[in-house]
Length: 494
Image (cartoon, rainbow, N blue to C red):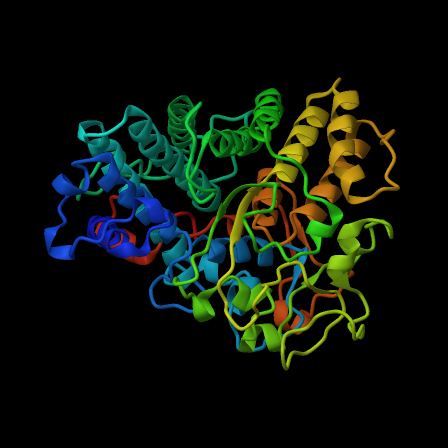
């Protein structure tokens, strides 16, 4: 699979140069036959096509598979593997195997191939940019923007992968289990897997480079990564490594310049980058049709077989903990019979179904995708402060800022210790529902999967409980990778 990455790099550059990049100002229209790494990186104007190619990858269909719409596929996977995301019916079968915790433990599965190949392809593109951009002609600010984004993408990709394929990071241990193969330059050879600790060391080095390069540099659109995004990624990394002081301080920096959305905006569908709270997201161009591999073909109001027969729902015990005056409670219909609650054309109603993700034009599956919001940064700050000990007052205040915005009747918490942490985590689960965080949270906190006592359809889900820390929390390396590298890349325990 690593040999294939090099071919994908060239293909993605050519796609970007043909006019499929995310920033219209930097598109090149030269024919494919003229494109080589030398002229792609001859100027910074040309090189923007390379970074745009990565942006485009974030919502491109993979392996010809309907459910693999770039990073939006990962977002869905990470929530359906947990408890708060409910599939009330099987519909046309997409995501059922993953929902049952079978796909990621099958070394020939699509989810493993995608989760491995998708992120390594981004890494390969980032490596090509890092290796070549310094020689490009153009403004120094442009070089910093391009190179800084490449470092941020590489850090983010390895971070996403090590959480899936590696053991849980535990700051009290050596973390010497197998992490990821650290490919840091354009190459065709195979590399053995580094340890989890070594992988995180590289991730932190890359994200620090990104912050240094991007600090003070403006970006053309929210599809591009800027210093706020890089700091947000760093805050996520620190939270996962249980570095509570760093997570809290970096999250506070990451949200600077972004305001929490109003309650009216909260009900507008989570499908537009103009939302003032979005720090990072894909501004989906109208001419980039995604059809049935769109995020909104599974979670929105685009009328697909899946959304019609399997409208996604919230876990009822979580819904029951939302205050009646909280605007977020309006994102779900607990009865499944509310005729005023939107449903896709020809769709079936189920209790606790969602309307969180809604397109302005439901006849077109194109919609902007949110990858990072200011609300998440408040939640990271609050959680990290609460877990430090002795910072409950500051943690309560960080939580209050967000919770009061969502619920006008919310009052400053008086909880302390574990009770305060529990309150913060409920807020996190509600706020970030279906945005791709819950499996990562369960794993980083070493908590079990518990779908019991709610509205999960046992026939569809089949798995209701999974103890914390079992082998099943690790994705398997794709079998093809083991075979192509002749065993240089080792498999996780079966």
